[in-house]
Image (cartoon, rainbow, N blue to C red; front, side, top):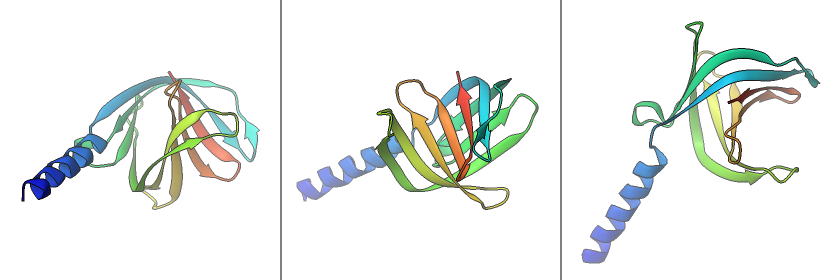
Length: 125
């Protein structure tokens, strides 16, 4: 019985830790459209990960716009071809239901949202 209780406590602790809210603030971004990198643009964006004890990722733009992504399938640790370590998760845009891939680069905190093949937006601190 004690082992079962300990296992339940450890499992609950792991689930709770995975859903801790954290916030990153970005000041600029670039986009890649049809495989062409666009010029850097400057705008403040606040990104809330695991908002309100969910696994949602929410982007708050200074303009007042908000984009919510509902993540699913769990976070994977992925190393890019260039050797950069990322935490990657699949998500659905809550406004239109389109699937995206969110990548958080561990060394820089850069957030990349891959929208489709040849299309992404990348946020920088």
